[in-house]
Image (tube, rainbow, N blue to C red; front, side, top):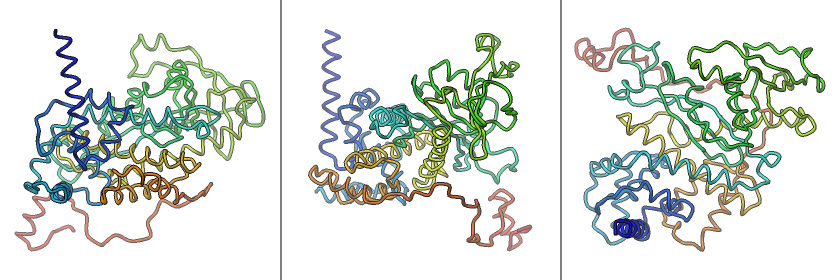
Length: 459
């Protein structure tokens, strides 16, 4: 009887999900999430809820749309939802943001994170074979920093850099992501404080090893060229291609020569690092066999040892594509505006992060479909153009019209990115910022000084 009641409850819950999706236009993205491949994941994490103005399906969709709009404020999201309800002949209710903000707080972060991971894995697994490198799945890894509002809660979880004085800095978090090279989708990510023991890029990346599958190839910069990471990944069946770390000397006179500036060499096990347990150190392999090559002025390290399968030029051309992870983080931080997060508590900051990554993956899903229809590769298409097309498309409620989706994919595929290999640009700005002084004291103290003195001293 208990099993039958549980099964009946599950079926009723599933039907409630489908009913809410069917009757609300605000859930354009949620329609994607409740497709056959993601429905079970969505249902497993969707909380039981009573009928509200902002049920989880609507709150998640509005949150995602906030991530894609140029004006990502809660007020703008609520205004759009009220206008949409009026257009559908429904009562607009209040345009105050309190109810919507509480609905965002009720959204389970685990649901948003699980959906992000599943969409990333789905895109990566279903990537066209022609998009892969030598038929293999290549994944990228890198880290970046994220700022957020200066609140006591955020400071406690993500302290500001130690070089900044109290009251004038901002909390700073470190994000490490694993991204599919073929589609640009985020497969998994980890967030932690920017400074402090146990929160380096290596520490966060070790929590993401489950995102890698046997047979994958991992690309990373010189920071990831560590004996311990390579040994761990090799034991997992994952090949690597990293730039040589600056602290390691490469001598091409040693090892087994494969060609000019190309050899196989053995690395000996280094002393135990302070963060590694004695038991883990004892089980780690005593030596690593890796291949080192020098091409275009840099030394690359790989576990792909056979030059007949992968020659120097293949490896060099592949490593050049590592730059895509920098462009992907630029799209996430600049195009989606996630460089500075908005939420005031660590719990909402983490939720905001996963919503932005989910929105990013859904745009990548549209780009992958457009690439299939047009015979292009997803990396040939413009991310920003796709965001612009999709936000306009949904604002006119065209996403519901099945017969116009082919037009949407054709429009996405019309704008391709320029192919500029070897492009070199200075990391400098030509346009000067406005000549305002830096705030060197807490804002409350600055206000007090202006009231007393009529100006801000030491400005």
